[in-house]
Amino acid sequence: MIKLKLLLVYFFGALILNLNFLQAEESLPADGEEQSKKPNQYNIKLLLGQETPGEGTRLDPGLLFKTFLYGGNILKYSTSFNLGVAKEYVQGEFSIGGQIYPLDYYKKSFVQPFFYVEASLGIGAYKKLTRVDGGHNLGVGLDIDIYKKYGFGLIVESHNALEKSLRLLIGLHIKDYL
Image (tube, rainbow, N blue to C red; front, side, top):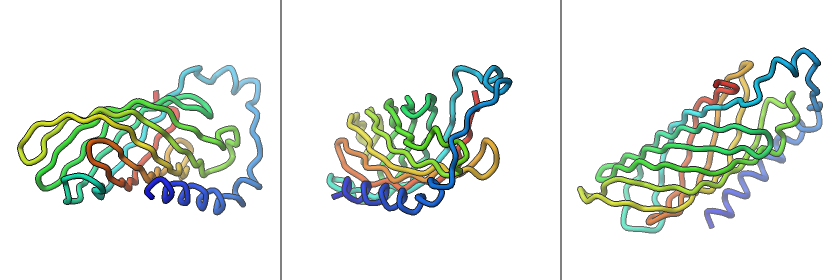
């Protein structure tokens, strides 16, 4: 059910962005611009959000802080760290995976939809008992450029591990940082 909701959000977002997609032009770099580009450029996302538990023993919603470091073109490789905190729950997750940006070649588009898959390993405590869990994250989102290299990131993520949850995140994204 959560995956269906994620797909609906992604496709309705793409439908809304259709006007932007039709007006965007494929930008080819100028000769001088092509030589000055770094071959390896990384992007960063800093996000805050809420986690709503699904199946499992935990019932209290939690707050999230998530960071992404990613690079590449249409197919981007990424790594992330997530810190989830609730009343009786604290967990840090390390993840590695990939992202797909289908409109990456349309540089004039100020909105970039994407989806990603990550494998995650979480270490934390629930009701003062230490635990480790592994799983995967499946998410969709939008990067909305506001100023040259800065913008907002919006993400809806399905977390599937020992306990399942739905995560909603919003934050800052910085392009070509490193």
